[in-house]
Amino acid sequence: MEWVPTVFIAFKVSVLGIGMFLAVKWHYDKARKEKGPESQRAVLWAAGKVIIAFALLLVALLLLTFGMGSVLGIDLNLP
Image 1: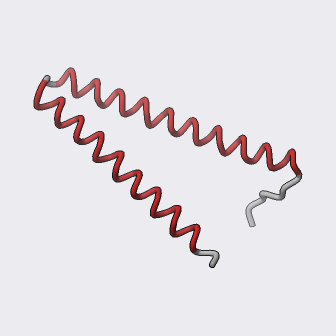
Image 2 (image 1 turned 30 degrees about the vertical axis):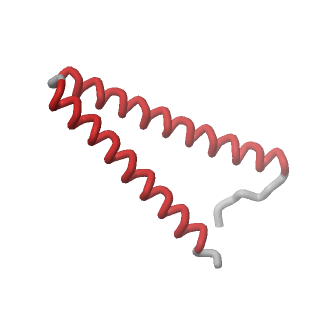
């Protein structure tokens, strides 16, 4: 029963990662076909900003979780 969350989280991360990749690829190809290199750079720049924002929010959420855990006295040490 301990492997179920690991499998579900891995599945969720892979599905969201594939979906994000395909969304960026679709916008990139659309920009290349319609407007040229300037639009391609804009799409890649926007995708980079979204990825950086997501990573920063993930780090902030992890820090908040471990901070609240230590305030509440929950042992969150890794084995």
